[in-house]
Length: 270
Image 1: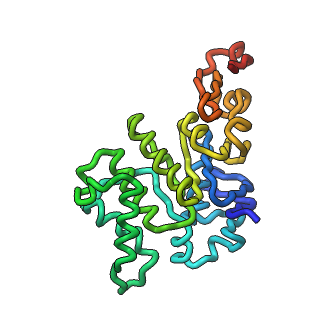
Image 2: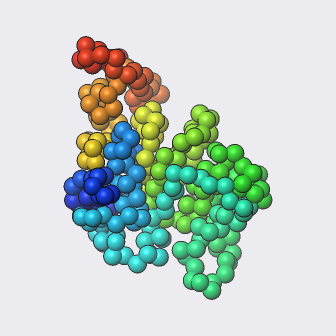
Image 3: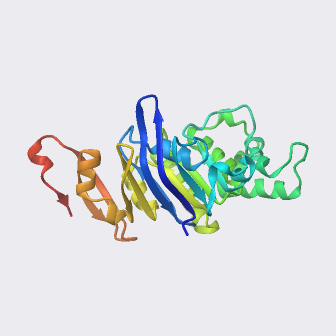
């Protein structure tokens, strides 16, 4: 049985169909990246899987249970969503991360030693020890992104969903965030589902790639199986030189726009 299963998912906004009759299965303990052109429904699908946006049609099951019939608090114990924008807030790093413990507490319950240990663990996992007492509003974009990831993992949910976690970050901070996410999966078995724009990040860090186009599932599978010249041409309208990383065997991509119909018929595969 799939860990997460979406069946016949359809979502519409006014007269636009964002996701159209989509079926999807997610296995536990793996990293998935959702890729596709702008407007193809990536973020909409992620929000549906995160129980943030009920689909117009279809159902989502988590461990065989209908996700949208699950009590909200119990769902929050299983799913954590990091939205696209890591906003600055007027709290210290440690204070903000502590909000990740909210699903585990009743309204009148106070933090205890176990909560404090988990907050410290989340800070360590995201390398924020030296920033724990800093105001979040004073941090750089990459640092703030790590704080919001720490908040999400302080929930200790089985699934972490991230919407474009590296957007607006410079290259070093992008890689820093990706390493934090990969470490959560590698060291703690967290299932990761993320929307990414960077093809090379998706290929390097994912067990499977989910390709969307026009609101539908175009393909799903291992990076070297899915991210082919034909897919890149048809879905993204780009040509690609594809190389193999000698260290891990993962594909890497040098992308080129399609200048004319003649070039569109060529494949650059190395």
